[in-house]
Amino acid sequence: MSTQKTLKQIRLIYFIVAILLAFFAALTFVFISTNGRVYTLDTMAENNLKSLIIVLALAGIPASYMFHNRKVKHIDPELSADKKMQQYRMSYFIKIMTLEGISLLSLLSYLITGNLNQLMTFGLVYLFLILNYPKKNNIFEELNIDPSES
Image (cartoon, rainbow, N blue to C red; front, side, top):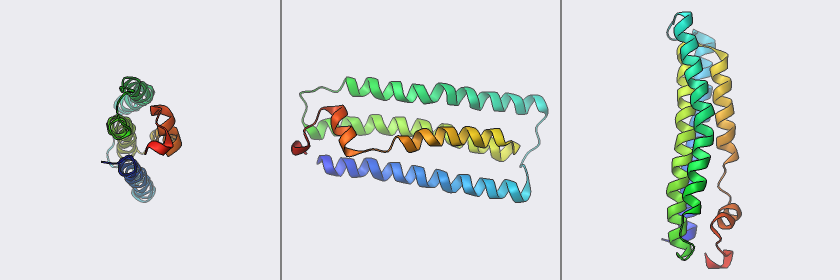
């Protein structure tokens, strides 16, 4: 598999996740605006859910970055560009899926409680997802791949 094909796969998954999350967020916001919260929780349960989502976001964002960086550092520099890209792809997917999972939990919590704080938590995590756009130059630099090698 060529590096270009692997890069296209990475970008395709990135765009699918980013667009579907934005669509789900818009749908959730419209639903809450028109119908209100889906389920009524007592104050204690709502605060616990809010705290859980915030802790997950505060732990999950750095954890996804650290995992990805550690996996990339352990890629053998002697491998071909294709093999490096394939290993990078797996690490990148795990990073993006971690951010996606936290985003979905935030949106589901917003859907249940109707609390705007959950939507703001989603926005924060979604911002980190958007900032992780897979640029070719950044990936090649991170993997020490010469652009002529691809």
